[in-house]
Length: 279
Length: 245
View 1 (cartoon, one colour):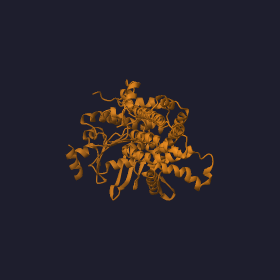
View 2 (cartoon, chains in turn orange, cyan; view 1 turned 90 degrees about the vertical axis):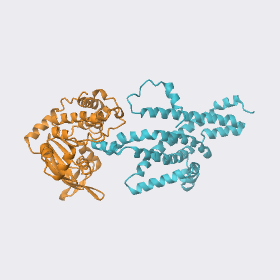
View 3 (cartoon, rainbow over the protein chains, first blue to last red; view 1 turned 45 degrees about the horizontal axis):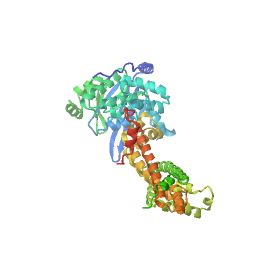
View 4 (tube, helix red, strand yellow; view 1 turned 60 degrees about the horizontal axis):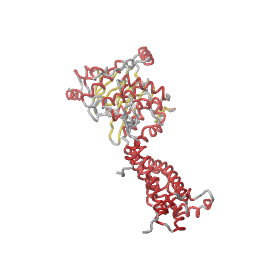
């Protein structure tokens, strides 16, 4: 299997941002403060607080039902919060802050613009079946960024090359393997030049032999300095690529630490049991 | 046996029938465009968050699917001008009335088909489109609608064929479409078999054209990179004319 090559993902702008970030240390790119979310009678998120530094990879572990996916959907502004706030580059997003501290949710049209700065990769890829690999990557450039077709074609082709799929760009999703589809999905999110990438169990729907090619792309991204939040059950990936690991259970963060802290010296009882089960 | 081939051929070349075919096609196209557009709107209303819109759409489908098309046609053509005298004016032609009646009827059926198509689109598609930053209109037009069309083309085609044949009901309000013109000729020469058979041939030709168009559109919605592969025009024609499911 030829591993995907990402090459020079760090374009000038990213490099510039990285330098700027180094100057103003300890700034969170993406931050959640006391996020609450309930569906009907159940409170899925019960006050989640965490932040990701620029260029960091944060892995989120937790049993199903612990609220990981809901958290990502809230961070991606796909679900309105019931309480708490999400900040991108220090600026509160998803709501309008009126005079007197009143907050109102933004209309969907404005939310859409804010979402385009946050990349999201889904467990089930969710590629658009009526568009080719190239068409999937071009859509956001044309319809959100307002690029013309020729420019979008050029940029999208380069992005597909970076995930190792340039010779598949004319293929439709149904003609691609799961691993290839997920790489297209990563390219589709990445091409928008997001400030942060969110991954919701990106390898859970893949056949075991296809997991590697997707993780390779993600690790390359991490090395190139992309800020990432990854919900995953891949312990090896978390140990290799994550700067921080966060354990969620019952809608709250129960423990956070370095990969070694979490995997070798877990403090929390729930984390201990979960890590043992993963190993 | 009284069947004269020469009169049958004469019927096939009769200008009055050709004129009727033209009118039938125009009526079909008008009712198709407005019927499908309105049907899509009603379908979107059926699952709208507003209770009022949902209720209105439900009543719409209940009414226009339940009332026979011919009754609807007579209500629009003779009933409405009675209540609203301004509709007695010239612009309110038979063609106009028939287009409205058939559109209203077609929209009721099409909305149920579109609704099924809308429900068939995976929720993850909308989520992914929103996550990408697409505005609501573009989520619908660029991501949802193409996928709705793909699954609705076969049932919609079936429906449009039915609608094409229903245009013959407009003969009742003296719209000079194919059936009305055929009847006029038969009233003069009493050659029922030759002329109605000729009319049947014209309907068959029009339906066949719709079927070819359907096959062509279905191919465009196949979403594979192999589309342009060596299928000859003849293959396609044979395939498109195969009996429907």
